[in-house]
Length: 264
Picture 1 (cartoon, rainbow, N blue to C red):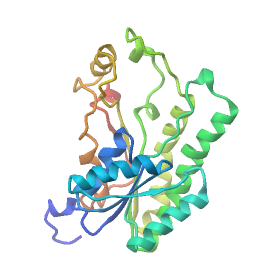
Picture 2: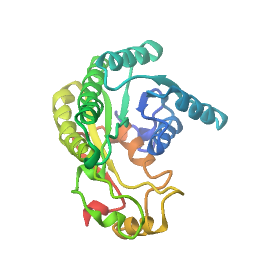
Picture 3: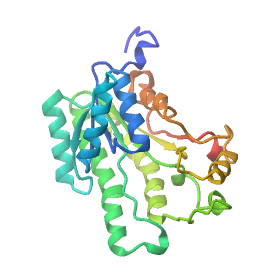
């Protein structure tokens, strides 16, 4: 990137992006961010029906994204997904690792649930980082953005549920895997860095929805510096930045996107 004007460096035109888990709350704005910034955008999950419904909505708004299906608990499926995108577009420049499995509260965690959880959120993420990183390295580089969580940075606390009427949940496997993702990002940043592949991790906070009780929203908002939960646009800027040439000298970072909650 020589003499590129700063705003041009944020453009994703000519780049090929994959967002996994693209039909979820955060996933939808991640897909939108890639498409709005000009990337050839793919999104993949196990539920092709929900993805297709979402991508049809995007088309009605003048945006374009292609739905694909895969199983993150299977390395064969991960390889097939990578191969399919390269077959269609010739390369892969950007991976947003957003798919996640949730095995539930610690009181209800069984060995079977835990093994499934780890096959998706631990082994699966490692294989996604390896297979797509290898493909990027072969074509001159790229950007992998892992989607962690504030719960990979802080410990369990009941503060969120006080006075809300909601059941307290403590997803031990979720904390474990999101915490591990922080250092896994550093590992791959070092491993594939010499081949021009960058790895960064963002750690989103809570996302506001209509179904949340007012007491929950107040508890969460009071814990942040900005006094609110995340909205439909709060992930877009950081994702485009990390995916683009604007962040070409940034790798191995862990960035909370949480209104300041983990800075308290």
